[in-house]
Image 1 (cartoon, rainbow, N blue to C red):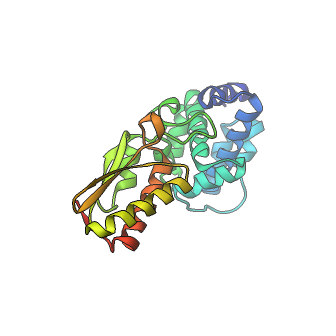
Image 2 (image 1 turned 90 degrees about the vertical axis):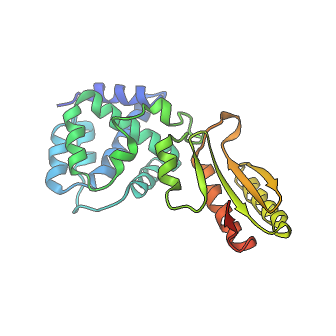
Image 3 (image 1 turned 180 degrees about the horizontal axis):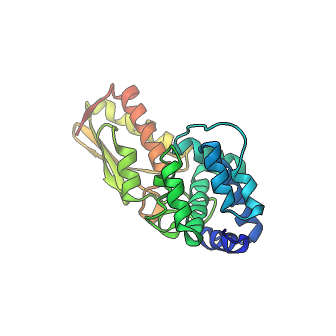
Length: 239
């Protein structure tokens, strides 16, 4: 069985939080959320390997509830009264802490959780201090894989973790209204879109501030740009 102090110390280290209580709270919230995505017998198996102080968080009542990763992280964020970005970072830290103390338990969860949560948390991929923001108010830096997954199915968007771009061909008289709409959307989100105009079109490039990375607010702004192209530019044409 995992020792309580060992688990909390691991989570605290991976999460970069200041207190044991913060690490324990994150661990409890994540385990309770994952527990809902397990069959009752699997919850009991998970609880048996956890210290008593957090075991009851995993052994929740009710039947299996199928949820995707976004829904799970939204629930973790709700439980911890934080943002989904911060929830993803903390959940990743909890999975890393479990892996430190019992790799077989993480393998068990991978085989039992009926969602892509553990894949999104990349328990065997990028470490938390590379892929995630440590500070609650700082947007999450996304990996190339995150960006490619987010852009899949989006019209005209290309890029990687250093920036994403969309080029749209439009009549010149529609470019200015489109750019003005995009700039309003960016200001409303405290974000910024780099605009490169050319005859018959415009290219929008998104990255977060001076960090030179793509974060989730950039993806949200990309959605708003798509909507603006539809509304102002009548869809435009991919460049």
